[in-house]
Image 1 (cartoon, rainbow over the protein chains, first blue to last red):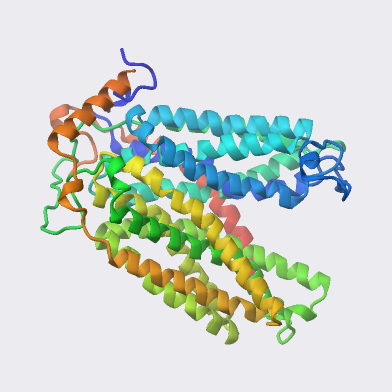
Image 2 (cartoon, helix red, strand yellow):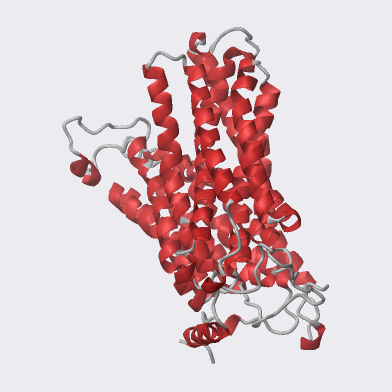
Length: 496
Length: 45
């Protein structure tokens, strides 16, 4: 009998309903999606020692000493490194372990992801208990980051094989979960921290323990819910479209060959540029609406942001947070919406819309700001965010169209390094341009305009990368012998 | 087209299990969306 986690063990039996696979994938993606919501812990953790007030470390204390200091509080900027670790390790682990996943199967990958993500929370709880920041970086950032990468790609290949007729919708559902995870996790963490807080503790340690256990169970449930279809399974009555010169291939490119094709690097550019522009705009959205519209947002028209008092700025910050919340809703709506639409209009056209319409909308933001039209401004950002989310959700189906389904999980894993790169490029670009403008005396509200035009330039480059995509050259496809041999290896690995 | 395994391999559907699985992931997601909507409402006050 095959081992409990083996791929061979989870080949669907007659009567299995393929609509059970998306909720299993969602259970994993909703859990790991909490990575986006980690900032909810920063403020309480920044006073973990002082509880009511942060106890700052002495200025003379060096970086290394601060890493091991247990008598003074962590800065928010120190805690913020967790985000960098998350996205660097997400991309790296997806790239490194993607090939293994194709052989080991989604259940084994999902279980490993559950141990990494849930275990990362437990190690972080120990880090809070001992007040050692390096334990948090190691636990949630590095080990948890590997769980993110494995969990993120674990259902992709399986969903695409179950839904060859609706690839975009199927992967869109799972990836929507990653966008929605923080919507559940952040308010839950807030409730738990309030529940566990005492006069001597901010309650983060207990919250980490509780959430780690919840995510571990949810992810295990998801992993054990995965089933793979029998080889060459198709939905009854569905005939694969055969069209000469089509962008959808019925053949397969090996992962080790895929990344040497121009198509891989064009898609890498497509993802990286779409995400860089999106990350840039997300980072700017909340401060931008406050600084551009100032008093107009709190019924004090005509009073610019710089002339508002502290209480009024606090009111504006609430509006900024509300704007960010609204954007997160459009982000997840775009994931399922655009990915599903791509099944109808095609992946290439979908990305052409992202880059052309997106570019036009980014360019319109300064005009909407100068015109003082808050509704138009908000509507533009909401639409932009749908395309940011849609870019993530549509890319696995695009890869399956171009490279076939045999290695799509592994190829997707390697492509996710584009996300890691965008995670650095987007914020760096936006922050440097903004600082450069402000240093030259440009008013804060106007400093955003140049940044928006630079983001438009990124989208123009992305437009041409997407436009240049053609089917893979004949020589890159696997031969029938290679495919049979690979499928034999998968069967052997799954029995191991 | 059917969403179940092809009839020649047998199978009855499991739609009750499908509904339960969707409720298990759908309820937390809707709770999260509701919370976010409440927060976003401040923009329109």
